[in-house]
Length: 299
Figure 1 (cartoon, one colour):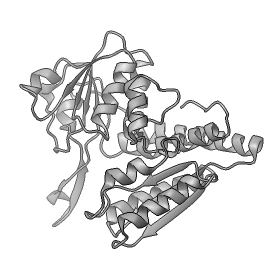
Figure 2 (cartoon, helix red, strand yellow):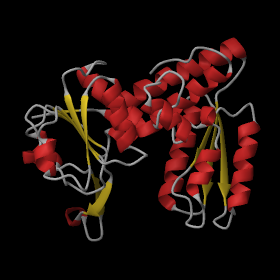
Figure 3 (cartoon, helix red, strand yellow):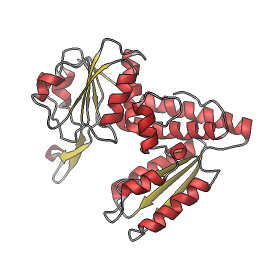
Figure 4 (cartoon, one colour):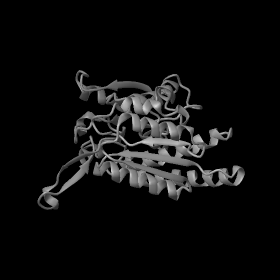
Protein backbone atom coordinates (compact mmCIF):
# COMPACT_ATOMS: atom_id res chain seq x y z
CA UNK A 1 0.00 0.00 0.00
CA UNK A 2 1.34 3.42 -1.01
CA UNK A 3 2.46 6.14 1.38
CA UNK A 4 -0.17 8.88 1.19
CA UNK A 5 1.68 12.20 0.82
CA UNK A 6 0.27 14.73 3.28
CA UNK A 7 0.02 18.04 1.40
CA UNK A 8 -1.64 19.75 4.37
CA UNK A 9 1.30 19.03 6.69
CA UNK A 10 3.88 20.13 4.09
CA UNK A 11 1.89 23.29 3.32
CA UNK A 12 1.72 24.10 7.04
CA UNK A 13 5.51 23.81 7.36
CA UNK A 14 5.99 26.09 4.29
CA UNK A 15 3.59 28.74 5.63
CA UNK A 16 5.30 28.65 9.03
CA UNK A 17 8.67 29.26 7.30
CA UNK A 18 7.04 32.09 5.30
CA UNK A 19 5.67 33.65 8.50
CA UNK A 20 9.15 33.60 10.09
CA UNK A 21 10.70 35.12 6.94
CA UNK A 22 8.05 37.88 6.92
CA UNK A 23 8.75 38.57 10.60
CA UNK A 24 12.50 38.79 9.93
CA UNK A 25 11.95 41.20 7.03
CA UNK A 26 9.78 43.46 9.17
CA UNK A 27 12.36 43.40 11.98
CA UNK A 28 15.24 44.24 9.62
CA UNK A 29 13.61 46.70 7.18
CA UNK A 30 10.30 47.71 8.79
CA UNK A 31 8.52 46.28 5.71
CA UNK A 32 5.58 43.88 5.67
CA UNK A 33 5.15 41.73 2.54
CA UNK A 34 2.12 43.10 0.67
CA UNK A 35 -0.25 40.89 -1.34
CA UNK A 36 -3.09 42.36 -3.42
CA UNK A 37 -5.75 39.95 -4.63
CA UNK A 38 -8.19 41.14 -7.31
CA UNK A 39 -11.46 39.33 -8.01
CA UNK A 40 -14.05 40.29 -10.63
CA UNK A 41 -17.63 39.02 -10.63
CA UNK A 42 -19.60 36.58 -8.51
CA UNK A 43 -18.18 33.10 -9.15
CA UNK A 44 -18.64 31.31 -5.79
CA UNK A 45 -15.62 28.98 -6.24
CA UNK A 46 -13.38 31.97 -7.04
CA UNK A 47 -14.65 33.83 -3.97
CA UNK A 48 -13.94 30.81 -1.77
CA UNK A 49 -10.37 30.59 -3.15
CA UNK A 50 -9.77 34.32 -2.68
CA UNK A 51 -11.06 34.27 0.90
CA UNK A 52 -8.71 31.41 1.80
CA UNK A 53 -5.77 33.24 0.17
CA UNK A 54 -6.52 36.48 2.04
CA UNK A 55 -6.93 34.59 5.32
CA UNK A 56 -3.60 32.78 4.85
CA UNK A 57 -1.84 36.06 3.95
CA UNK A 58 -3.00 37.57 7.26
CA UNK A 59 -1.80 34.45 9.14
CA UNK A 60 1.63 34.91 7.52
CA UNK A 61 1.77 38.49 8.81
CA UNK A 62 1.33 40.10 5.37
CA UNK A 63 -0.36 43.34 4.49
CA UNK A 64 -3.28 41.70 2.67
CA UNK A 65 -5.42 43.83 0.32
CA UNK A 66 -8.48 42.58 -1.55
CA UNK A 67 -10.17 44.35 -4.48
CA UNK A 68 -13.63 42.94 -5.25
CA UNK A 69 -14.93 44.35 -8.53
CA UNK A 70 -18.41 44.00 -10.09
CA UNK A 71 -19.04 41.69 -13.06
CA UNK A 72 -19.50 44.67 -15.42
CA UNK A 73 -15.99 46.06 -14.76
CA UNK A 74 -14.30 46.88 -18.10
CA UNK A 75 -10.91 45.76 -19.42
CA UNK A 76 -9.64 49.36 -19.18
CA UNK A 77 -10.77 49.69 -15.53
CA UNK A 78 -9.06 46.45 -14.53
CA UNK A 79 -5.85 47.44 -16.38
CA UNK A 80 -5.91 50.78 -14.55
CA UNK A 81 -6.18 49.02 -11.14
CA UNK A 82 -3.29 46.67 -12.02
CA UNK A 83 -1.24 49.71 -13.07
CA UNK A 84 -1.91 51.38 -9.70
CA UNK A 85 -0.89 48.21 -7.83
CA UNK A 86 2.26 47.93 -9.98
CA UNK A 87 3.19 51.47 -8.87
CA UNK A 88 2.44 50.85 -5.16
CA UNK A 89 5.72 50.09 -3.36
CA UNK A 90 3.87 48.53 -0.39
CA UNK A 91 2.47 45.79 -2.67
CA UNK A 92 4.97 43.04 -3.56
CA UNK A 93 2.58 40.49 -5.06
CA UNK A 94 -0.44 40.96 -7.35
CA UNK A 95 -2.84 38.14 -8.04
CA UNK A 96 -5.80 38.47 -10.42
CA UNK A 97 -8.15 35.55 -9.70
CA UNK A 98 -8.91 33.45 -12.79
CA UNK A 99 -11.14 32.74 -14.60
CA UNK A 100 -12.20 36.32 -15.31
CA UNK A 101 -15.69 36.95 -16.73
CA UNK A 102 -15.91 36.12 -20.45
CA UNK A 103 -15.71 39.71 -21.75
CA UNK A 104 -12.10 40.10 -20.54
CA UNK A 105 -8.90 39.44 -22.45
CA UNK A 106 -7.34 37.57 -19.53
CA UNK A 107 -3.90 37.29 -21.08
CA UNK A 108 -3.55 41.05 -21.53
CA UNK A 109 -4.46 41.53 -17.84
CA UNK A 110 -2.00 38.88 -16.61
CA UNK A 111 0.85 40.19 -18.78
CA UNK A 112 0.23 43.75 -17.49
CA UNK A 113 1.34 42.68 -13.98
CA UNK A 114 5.01 43.54 -13.38
CA UNK A 115 6.98 40.25 -13.59
CA UNK A 116 8.59 40.91 -10.19
CA UNK A 117 5.07 41.17 -8.65
CA UNK A 118 3.62 38.25 -10.65
CA UNK A 119 3.27 35.84 -7.71
CA UNK A 120 1.17 33.47 -9.84
CA UNK A 121 4.24 32.99 -12.08
CA UNK A 122 2.21 33.45 -15.28
CA UNK A 123 4.03 36.30 -17.05
CA UNK A 124 5.93 35.35 -20.20
CA UNK A 125 9.13 36.64 -18.55
CA UNK A 126 8.75 34.33 -15.54
CA UNK A 127 7.76 31.42 -17.81
CA UNK A 128 10.84 32.13 -19.95
CA UNK A 129 13.16 32.24 -16.94
CA UNK A 130 11.88 28.85 -15.83
CA UNK A 131 12.27 27.45 -19.37
CA UNK A 132 15.91 28.59 -19.50
CA UNK A 133 16.65 27.12 -16.07
CA UNK A 134 16.80 30.44 -14.19
CA UNK A 135 15.15 29.45 -10.90
CA UNK A 136 17.00 32.15 -8.96
CA UNK A 137 15.47 35.40 -10.27
CA UNK A 138 11.99 34.50 -11.58
CA UNK A 139 8.77 33.52 -9.79
CA UNK A 140 7.50 29.97 -10.36
CA UNK A 141 3.83 29.15 -10.91
CA UNK A 142 2.40 28.10 -7.52
CA UNK A 143 0.81 24.71 -8.23
CA UNK A 144 3.81 23.16 -10.03
CA UNK A 145 6.17 24.68 -7.41
CA UNK A 146 4.07 23.03 -4.67
CA UNK A 147 3.86 19.69 -6.51
CA UNK A 148 7.64 19.79 -6.97
CA UNK A 149 8.18 20.23 -3.22
CA UNK A 150 6.12 17.07 -2.64
CA UNK A 151 8.24 15.19 -5.22
CA UNK A 152 11.44 16.38 -3.52
CA UNK A 153 10.06 15.21 -0.18
CA UNK A 154 10.07 11.66 -1.58
CA UNK A 155 13.09 11.66 -3.92
CA UNK A 156 15.35 14.49 -2.70
CA UNK A 157 16.61 17.40 -4.82
CA UNK A 158 18.39 15.41 -7.53
CA UNK A 159 16.15 13.30 -9.76
CA UNK A 160 19.02 11.96 -11.92
CA UNK A 161 18.20 8.59 -13.48
CA UNK A 162 14.45 8.86 -12.86
CA UNK A 163 11.82 8.92 -15.61
CA UNK A 164 9.02 11.45 -15.13
CA UNK A 165 5.80 11.60 -17.16
CA UNK A 166 3.54 14.67 -17.00
CA UNK A 167 0.03 14.18 -18.42
CA UNK A 168 -1.20 17.60 -19.49
CA UNK A 169 0.57 20.44 -21.31
CA UNK A 170 -1.18 23.57 -20.02
CA UNK A 171 0.75 26.81 -19.50
CA UNK A 172 -0.67 26.94 -15.98
CA UNK A 173 0.66 23.58 -14.86
CA UNK A 174 1.89 20.95 -17.31
CA UNK A 175 4.65 22.92 -19.04
CA UNK A 176 6.14 24.50 -15.89
CA UNK A 177 5.96 21.13 -14.07
CA UNK A 178 7.90 19.51 -16.89
CA UNK A 179 10.53 22.28 -16.70
CA UNK A 180 10.93 21.88 -12.92
CA UNK A 181 11.41 18.12 -13.25
CA UNK A 182 13.92 18.67 -16.05
CA UNK A 183 15.82 21.23 -13.96
CA UNK A 184 16.10 18.56 -11.23
CA UNK A 185 17.72 16.19 -13.78
CA UNK A 186 14.74 13.87 -14.39
CA UNK A 187 14.20 12.48 -17.90
CA UNK A 188 10.83 14.03 -18.76
CA UNK A 189 8.07 12.94 -21.14
CA UNK A 190 5.24 15.41 -21.75
CA UNK A 191 2.07 13.43 -22.52
CA UNK A 192 -1.38 14.78 -23.44
CA UNK A 193 -4.70 14.00 -25.14
CA UNK A 194 -2.96 13.32 -28.49
CA UNK A 195 -0.35 10.94 -27.05
CA UNK A 196 -0.51 7.50 -28.64
CA UNK A 197 -1.02 4.63 -26.17
CA UNK A 198 -0.97 6.88 -23.12
CA UNK A 199 -1.20 3.98 -20.64
CA UNK A 200 2.05 2.44 -21.93
CA UNK A 201 3.84 5.81 -21.75
CA UNK A 202 2.65 6.30 -18.15
CA UNK A 203 3.93 2.87 -17.17
CA UNK A 204 7.53 4.02 -17.84
CA UNK A 205 7.29 6.69 -15.13
CA UNK A 206 9.10 6.60 -11.79
CA UNK A 207 7.28 9.91 -11.16
CA UNK A 208 3.82 10.24 -12.74
CA UNK A 209 2.07 13.62 -12.62
CA UNK A 210 -1.58 13.77 -13.76
CA UNK A 211 -3.13 17.14 -14.62
CA UNK A 212 -5.86 16.66 -17.21
CA UNK A 213 -9.16 17.29 -15.42
CA UNK A 214 -10.71 13.87 -16.07
CA UNK A 215 -11.94 12.02 -13.00
CA UNK A 216 -10.11 8.74 -12.22
CA UNK A 217 -8.59 8.56 -15.72
CA UNK A 218 -5.29 7.04 -14.55
CA UNK A 219 -5.91 3.39 -13.65
CA UNK A 220 -3.86 0.95 -11.59
CA UNK A 221 -2.49 -0.83 -14.68
CA UNK A 222 -1.15 2.49 -16.05
CA UNK A 223 1.28 2.78 -13.13
CA UNK A 224 4.74 1.28 -12.71
CA UNK A 225 4.99 -0.63 -9.40
CA UNK A 226 6.78 1.57 -6.86
CA UNK A 227 6.15 4.85 -8.72
CA UNK A 228 5.43 8.20 -7.09
CA UNK A 229 2.06 9.55 -8.31
CA UNK A 230 1.20 13.25 -8.06
CA UNK A 231 -2.50 13.89 -8.73
CA UNK A 232 -3.24 17.51 -9.63
CA UNK A 233 -6.80 16.94 -10.88
CA UNK A 234 -9.80 18.41 -9.07
CA UNK A 235 -13.06 16.96 -10.37
CA UNK A 236 -16.49 17.09 -8.73
CA UNK A 237 -18.54 13.95 -9.25
CA UNK A 238 -21.89 12.70 -7.98
CA UNK A 239 -21.74 10.90 -4.64
CA UNK A 240 -25.14 9.23 -4.14
CA UNK A 241 -23.67 7.28 -1.17
CA UNK A 242 -23.59 10.63 0.71
CA UNK A 243 -27.24 11.28 -0.02
CA UNK A 244 -29.37 12.56 -2.88
CA UNK A 245 -27.80 15.36 -4.91
CA UNK A 246 -24.49 15.17 -3.00
CA UNK A 247 -21.09 15.34 -4.70
CA UNK A 248 -17.43 14.79 -3.82
CA UNK A 249 -14.00 15.87 -5.06
CA UNK A 250 -11.80 13.32 -6.80
CA UNK A 251 -8.54 13.55 -8.72
CA UNK A 252 -7.43 12.39 -12.16
CA UNK A 253 -6.12 9.18 -10.61
CA UNK A 254 -8.25 6.18 -9.54
CA UNK A 255 -6.92 6.47 -5.99
CA UNK A 256 -7.79 3.06 -4.52
CA UNK A 257 -6.42 0.94 -7.36
CA UNK A 258 -3.36 3.13 -8.00
CA UNK A 259 -2.40 3.26 -4.31
CA UNK A 260 -2.21 -0.55 -4.36
CA UNK A 261 0.57 -0.30 -7.01
CA UNK A 262 2.39 3.00 -6.33
CA UNK A 263 4.93 3.60 -3.54
CA UNK A 264 3.68 7.15 -2.83
CA UNK A 265 0.59 9.08 -3.92
CA UNK A 266 -1.07 12.44 -3.25
CA UNK A 267 -4.73 12.33 -2.21
CA UNK A 268 -7.49 14.64 -3.54
CA UNK A 269 -8.37 16.66 -1.58
CA UNK A 270 -5.42 17.24 0.80
CA UNK A 271 -2.49 16.69 -1.57
CA UNK A 272 -1.34 19.29 -4.08
CA UNK A 273 -4.25 21.69 -3.34
CA UNK A 274 -2.99 23.07 0.00
CA UNK A 275 0.49 23.50 -1.53
CA UNK A 276 -0.79 26.01 -4.11
CA UNK A 277 -1.75 28.62 -1.50
CA UNK A 278 1.41 27.92 0.52
CA UNK A 279 3.59 28.60 -2.55
CA UNK A 280 1.64 31.79 -3.29
CA UNK A 281 2.65 32.99 0.18
CA UNK A 282 6.25 31.87 -0.47
CA UNK A 283 6.35 33.79 -3.78
CA UNK A 284 5.04 36.93 -2.06
CA UNK A 285 7.71 36.87 0.65
CA UNK A 286 10.39 36.15 -2.00
CA UNK A 287 9.19 39.16 -4.02
CA UNK A 288 9.23 41.35 -0.88
CA UNK A 289 12.83 40.37 -0.05
CA UNK A 290 13.96 41.05 -3.63
CA UNK A 291 12.23 44.46 -3.61
CA UNK A 292 14.44 45.36 -0.62
CA UNK A 293 17.56 44.15 -2.41
CA UNK A 294 17.91 41.22 -0.02
CA UNK A 295 18.68 37.56 -0.76
CA UNK A 296 15.33 35.80 -0.91
CA UNK A 297 14.59 32.83 1.37
CA UNK A 298 14.29 29.34 -0.16
CA UNK A 299 11.38 27.01 0.56
